[in-house]
Length: 373
Ligand code: ATP
Ligand code: MG
Image (cartoon, rainbow, N blue to C red):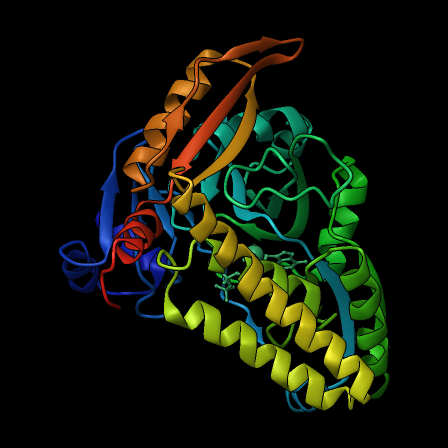
């Protein structure tokens, strides 16, 4: 790898790059191709940015800021029109072609063997044949998504939805219009685009969309500048905020405090901004309260019955090699997971995975035995 050339492409000095190699840049030699990844954001370089062995760079997907007071944030942030797109709840992958092979990259900058197998099935080869430099940014969603399994999308396995495009070696993304055109040209699924609205009308339209998405168990929206001049904003449904809390309180000792607080605060701002009636606010309070109390009590009762606190997920793979590699990938990402023996199915193998939630498990046990908080 020619480090000087890489530094030039990243727009930093060679010395800076060499210093970063001692700190935020980590090496990953598996699976092939070998790569360097930015574990944290630095010098205007996004976290998850990857430098492949051949010197090609895939930039990290930028963070999206969240609107809390929707109307005010829309007014402050956007200059003219706003495109409202669905925010899908799965995990972020960037799909690229390196030395002629498709790879799916996680947010943190690892090659995920499972996502790569899924990508190979869902992304036509023509995409990278025509555009070898393209990076497809999208969300992997569905019940066989091992990180955030969700039943609310039209798939009983896992699916890929494109929401952005970027190019190898280039910072920034190509924007909402180009992305949807590209998806159409290549028959890829893309996140729903609900419409483009003037900045003033965007608030009421977005609230209407959010209410309807919430009823359907969907996550929320990402609001984008159609001209791609200002960065996007995200905003989520109450049902989704509460859904997150439900998972987090089930595993209450395994989540950071901020995860709980930020979601509760979103509910406060939405309730105030929407000027809810007494009745609506009470319904929200009930939803919020249930999402905190019910899963937590469930966890405690499980432990009282002597059960382990475990999360079950499942994936389907074409080859057993992928299953083995995915097991290794989870382990190196620091995730504890127990893989059941593969079960042959018509399309390959079903792999059931149990994730013991150790901290919540042990904490609950200790408290039940009289430990103090
Ligand atoms: P951040 O982007 O602030 O790091 P995060 O990692 O906490 O956020 P989210 O709160 O889920 O993640 O919000 C951003 C993510 O939303 C994106 O990284 C992407 O994976 C996902 N996403 C889903 N749908 C879209 C969409 N239509 N446009 C952009 N991102 C989307
Ligand atoms: Mg997400």
